Image (cartoon, rainbow, N blue to C red; front, side):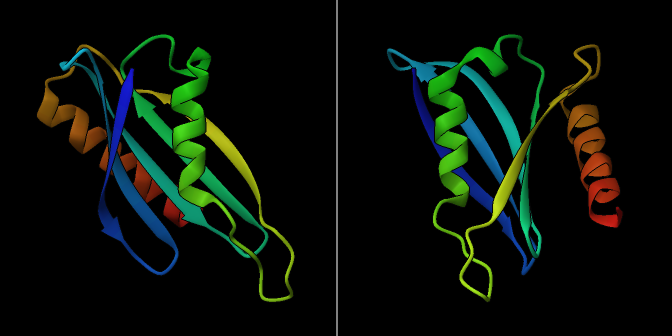
Length: 110
């Protein structure tokens, strides 16, 4: 499987990415990845309708590469936590996008 990451939003404390997966040139899946940068911890949220995302170690390693080599002001490497969030399959694509955006807003408020 090949993965292509495209950053679609970058703010001081967060980034939003789209991750496209393809196999032998054929589209397989797309997910939304949201990264929230904190003082001591970075949180990575993978929003997906596809089963098996958690077991796809190549994919998870690709996503983890989004937060490599980040350090705090005093030189310590950030901890990170990975969150898998299932997106309801019964929604239309537009509804799924709205649902993901509302969840990201909730995350940023916390």
